Amino acid sequence: QVTLKESGPVLVKPTDTLTLTCAISGFSLSNETMGVSWIRQPPGKALEWLAHLFSNDRASYSRPLRSRLSLSKDTSKSQVVLTMTNLDLVDTGTYYCARGVVGRAFDVWGQGTMVTVSS
Amino acid sequence: DSQLTQSPSTLSASVGDRVTIACRASQNINRWLAWYQQKPGEAPRLLIYQASTLETGVPSRFSGSGSGTEFSLTISSLQPDDFATYYCQQYNTYPWSFGQGTKVEIK
Image (tube, rainbow over all chains, first blue to last red; front, side, top):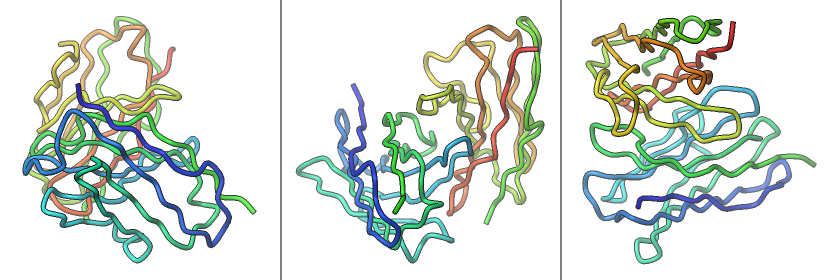
């Protein structure tokens, strides 16, 4: 069974750096046909794609957020880590990680983790 | 960057109705489009990928069509479980992107 689970802080302050972890199981981060994306959703708003990590460690980022985002992985721990710097109130929302399969988009999603940015 | 525009933003319908949601891309995305269903408090669920391929386990009342810049999701006979928000997403070119969503509500 393929699962993904996000974890990280619930409350962060403006200008802080956010680190979120996606723990995966049921597939390998070394699989060339698969990768992991991060997607977020402000309360009551639409989904926003943030970044994608490929099996070869190449990453692609949202253009508006590129300077603030960084992706990494620990294959031995089956984890993908998203780092976002210089947080603002508008970064409040639910952050999801999802498996991306070549040709099939995001077929399995984590439950999401809610992050609130507030002073 | 390829932008996606969904219409309508909200759709009021009754159980048994046939409903169609449109998704327009700002540039040619071939058939690299997916549709997701999201219910309140839940993660999105993949319904359709490559514009018209039904994900395993998704009821056959859902169907997708289109290519290039014009796409649609159709529910042939709306069921109580289908009242939710639907998103299209393109994965033709980076950065990937989602539409703004269409909420299907009870009439």
